[in-house]
Length: 438
Image (tube, rainbow, N blue to C red):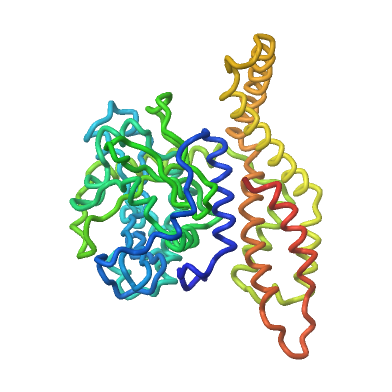
């Protein structure tokens, strides 16, 4: 369990998180404003409020992040993402659509509590440690994705027409501005990225791409990434009425005082019921993962319950044998090929009618685009039938295993105890993970 969010820790997770964001942006679109290296040099304003926290990014019981800079000066209070009820986004927009679609963190925690009893409700978080609050955030995030299928995000048109922040969280909350986001230092960004990173969290809970208002008050995208090369893509006019995957709707609080009372959201309960029903139908229509992947998942579940098995040469040898499965090799390769196909499709979609190339080249691109569209259509059908679910599951299992094995490998060896050899397993996990993970 991670116990600190000081900016000097978690560099490996920050690097992975930045890589994931980069892949997302490559698929979304190109262009935008690049983060300059001057971000790191911006000091915390001397008149910023003092807080009783060390520099870093710290969760509270409602999933918000308090970002603290040098001298314990408050930089920003950033809410957990407000999830969107997909069915409500079909409305015509405006305040009613934003209110119907809003599913803030505290409601998700309440909805997930029965199935995940270790989740803390808001009133239980006052005495929780920073590590417990961080674990709580990620457990609610996993439930939102796995149990409730809340991963699609908001459509820009709805966010543009009515700021969902005060509707979902109360007066005093609003969308961040692009200036506020760009004003964060590199240490601030590293702390935020380290706090949010989790390979098992789908959708927006781990995303560093956020909705914001530009200086003219227009809706834009901004990035919290610490990588100076990462860019926030522009919001295009096409398909603004469709959910934008990977863009989180996070809010900022106007003051550092006591947060306002949470508003009543009468449509949320019905939406959550519909989301659960839809998720149950998807699960029922699926097929179980391949047998070798099931065995690996069972081994992982046992190791999570009893971490000492990773210190046993016998059990580590068993893990090594499971990882040598040709079925896992095939799933990883299929995931890599599918990702490459999708990336190529996105590239062609941007350039298929480029007037700068010849007519013959445009025809060739259209033919390739149509061919890829047919292939991807077939893969979507396979996914709906559950035949490709093993690829997604493999990526999550590999990530969790790598974290556990790496932790075991760095433990000081006990006296007079034969230490297993972890490097071959780590090498195999890195190989599989490089292909299976997006």
